[in-house]
Image 1 (cartoon, helix red, strand yellow):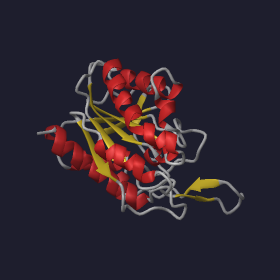
Image 2 (cartoon, rainbow, N blue to C red; image 1 turned 90 degrees about the vertical axis):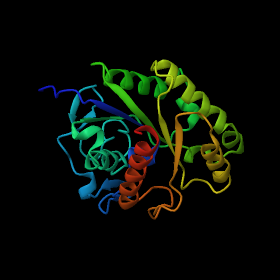
Image 3 (cartoon, rainbow, N blue to C red; image 1 turned 45 degrees about the horizontal axis):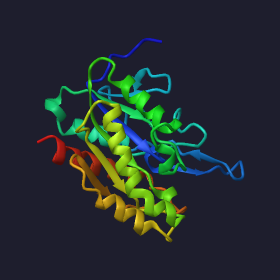
Image 4 (cartoon, helix red, strand yellow; image 1 turned 45 degrees about the vertical axis):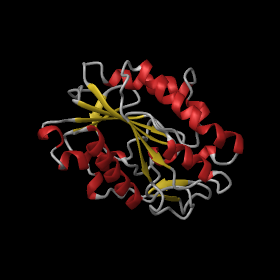
Length: 250
């Protein structure tokens, strides 16, 4: 397979199912208990020659939805925020218009933050993929993190969330030799009502330089009350792009 030229500006996409994308994933009418993706790609998420994706085999290819199909591979993936984010940056003549964006999908559905601790498989895989993405000397512009729904069920996890997230940011910056690595986290819009506010409070309360938060609360959810709709993912991508430009491209 022909190797695509490496992109110039790298964004890491990580977390759980709402980052991996469940937009347009619907019950399969022919198979009870199974799901399929409806295949609908909004224009904001269309492929663009300036947007590439790092495959599970660490090769660059033209990015297209679903971005996480070979990463969150045990689930059915649909539209997430990554393509909308990247197209939005390119529409705004990001970096003078000459940038090629590299998206590095790392999110895995249903995962708790403790599974993303240094030494755990998910964390180490994210670091390995992030390092591979800058093998040609490019720069990681930001890590985008949308996770926490799985930590809303038990009080012990909700209470520990802030410390675990702060440790994750610290470890990631160290392991990627990037002490000021920008991180944009999404405050969750869904989860177990028992402790969702505790996790959101943690996310919105982190005060680390170079870490910003966008709030998904109020974005439309699918009938499962857990996953963002395709339209919501398009909007979230725009919010993430705006947060990046406002905070890190001055």
